Structures are given as C-alpha cells and as structure tokens.
Image 1 (cartoon, one colour):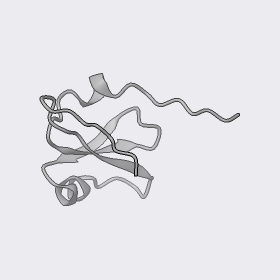
Image 2 (tube, rainbow, N blue to C red):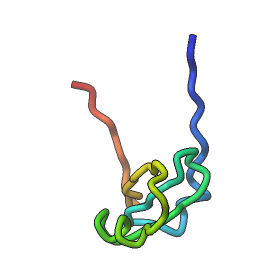
Image 3 (tube, helix red, strand yellow):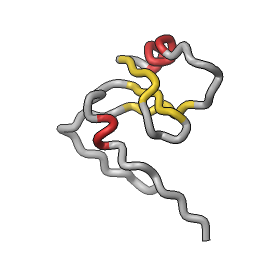
Length: 68
C-alpha cells in the first residue's frame, strides 16, 4: 500500500491569509506569493522548477468538502 504524507502547512502559511502562494515541489518553503495567482507567478522569477500553487483561505472560515 502506498501512503503519502503531507507536511503540516499551518506554520508555513500563517502569514499568507487570503493570498496565493507558490510552494516548492517538496512543499517545504514558499517561493512566491501575491493577491492573485498571476501576481504570484510574475514575482516568481526562479528557474523552471516545478511549484505547487495554493490559495490560502481566510483563517476565519470553514471548508467542508462535498463528495459528489
């Protein structure tokens, strides 16, 4: 059985509420951020390394996934 573990992003993302972040492929550091995804991508002038784009939600809201 393959199980994948994901890092706890709560400490890493606490300064990026309501922003888009680009995370390194190993999801251990924020390489860029912005109000929009386009802004975060524009700020990221790094190499062609793969990154993970993520929208950090408001910390005062809840997310309840729905199964369809």
